[in-house]
Image (cartoon, rainbow, N blue to C red; front, side):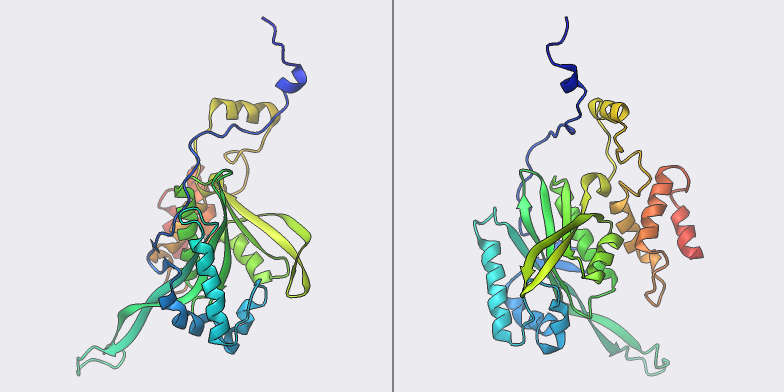
Length: 313
């Protein structure tokens, strides 16, 4: 029996069907890793957080932010109270979740062995956790299954450390484990460190919105980046998806030359203690770890080959 649907509609790609339940709101859960913990913003951390990212000495951290800098504790507290209000709005369905970034507070003490050499007579002990930065999940859209990471403020103590990278890993894992399919990163197009960080972390550049906003009296162009569930971890494709890819040469993740599907394992390999020398220096860059994962997936590198690559680096 002939189809009543015009050929022009039968052969017009409309995008893949999306199935499965709508994901729940991510919730304000505590997220803990090897190097860092993310806890929901609370007034008990305001003082220490101000010392880490507020005050005149930290004004440069807020250059490209929508708010700040905060030269007095009172102004900083008012800003943080606003964040708390956003997080509490419609409990369980709020459009923003603000986190305080905590790292272990290491105290160097004497080991107590009088016969030890000076450097051997010292040891480090963990004395609680201290705030070193802030970040948020916002523009939470369960219907379209997308979330944006934002308000990322890293203190000088946190910058360029494994903890800084792990903080993004924890948020991304939380988002994708909850069933979301898109994790966004947006920044001022002139904010070169943020642009560089997005690319390093596995977000893909998607374009720049010109004259997007007016921030602190200046025009802002906004650079858009995102990683998707397919970037995060490879999955199996349905027969319908495979047919669409075959008929229209759609560049599905399993077919392109990028490190698609390797972001999650790339993070995990980079964060592996083996990837760091005794002085804390990385052996393999995060970007290289994603390439190693892709090569292992494609049979070009053994599963343990990355260890050899790291040792040789």
